[in-house]
Amino acid sequence: MKQLVIISGKGGTGKTIISACFATLAQKKVVADCDVDASNLYLLLHPEIQETHQFTGGMKARIVQEKCTGCGECVNTCRFSAISEKEEGEVIIDPISCEGCAVCSYICPEEAIKMEESMSGEWFVSQTKYGPFVHARLGIAQENSGKLVTEVRKKAKDIAEKEKLDLAIIDGPPGIGCPVIASLSGTDLALVVTEPSLSGIHDMERVIQMAHYFKTQTACCINKYDLNLQNSAQIESWCEKNSIPLVGKIPFDEEVTKSMVQGIPLTEYANNSVSKEIKKMWQKLDKLFTREEIKK
View 1 (cartoon, rainbow, N blue to C red):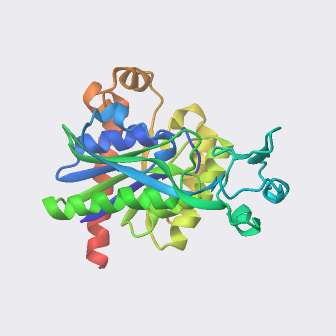
View 2 (view 1 turned 120 degrees about the vertical axis):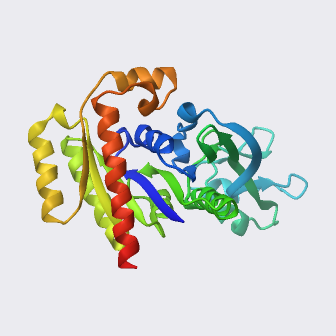
């Protein structure tokens, strides 16, 4: 089984749209949405949820009121202002403000503060018209971590092995943080989606450098390349200089927005210049997979 992850140095470059298009083009695959902070691939794939699992991503402090003497040590120690004291002397903890650092539990002389696992969200195993789909949803004010991304990837891999699928398509998160590392490590090919803006160029370079640190083969595509031809030329030059295959130059088209509003992947919504370019890009990526297989 091969693993393709679609990532971007910054948000809003169009990687989720491209991931959905790849889901319509690939055969014998499983799709995983690892952008759990903004999990929106389901809007285009319309999954039917078959399994729901809870995710505990961290710890939260809880006060055992029977033991608490109201000494105020925890109130003075908490750096996140998550602990406060009511007028009647009762000490309370705001679970949203609590960062789970556990300092209060160590400092409490009465051992009245316990650290407990906190449910951060849920992850799902679903079925779509394009095949199996694994995705997640974080709770309100919950932060993403590589732990949830790893859980989603692990389940997608298990499904692929069980059903003897050839490919896992992973819609990764933007940036270069922990969730991106969890999405990227161990994959066979990373497609970096960028845009012809100064921030797009800068963040593309950073995420490609990070992918190379993990020894992941990378390719690049420019979305909405015709909005700034000068910056697109700069991206092409940089990719050529650093031996990064440029597999696609996708033009701007308002039909893309219309397909999103309808909740239909572009390759099924319209046979325009954008969908044709994405199909060509998919063929080029398939050749890159073959080349990697020959290397091994």
